[in-house]
Amino acid sequence: QVRLVESGGGSVQAGDSLRVSCAASGDTFSNYAMGWFRQAPGKEREFVAAIGWSGTNTRYADSVKGRFSISRDDAKNTVYLQMNSLKPEDTAVYYCATDRHNSWYPSTLTYEYDYWGQGTQVTVSS
Image (tube, rainbow, N blue to C red; front, side):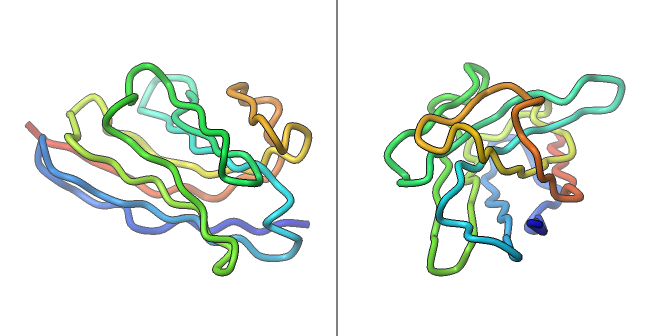
């Protein structure tokens, strides 16, 4: 059983930066790939970024490439999403999740992720 708790969301202006965190507990965090997803009102949950267990492999949605950066600190059992040059269309609830089946090269598919956090709201105003 893995418990994930996101934090760091908030309300910012377009062009600002924000870092959200996801703290894991309950199992060996360092064995898993981790991903960030987001869901805006009335839309389906979508992939944002993911990082493999070693930190070597990362993947990003085209919409955030060059602006967002995912990282992990296994000593703290935490994965981060640094978001720069935020846009109003980045407004959503951001979720972290574990991908225990593709630990080396993480998936971008929602259904391949098993444990999920409760989400943290990010609101970007123009």
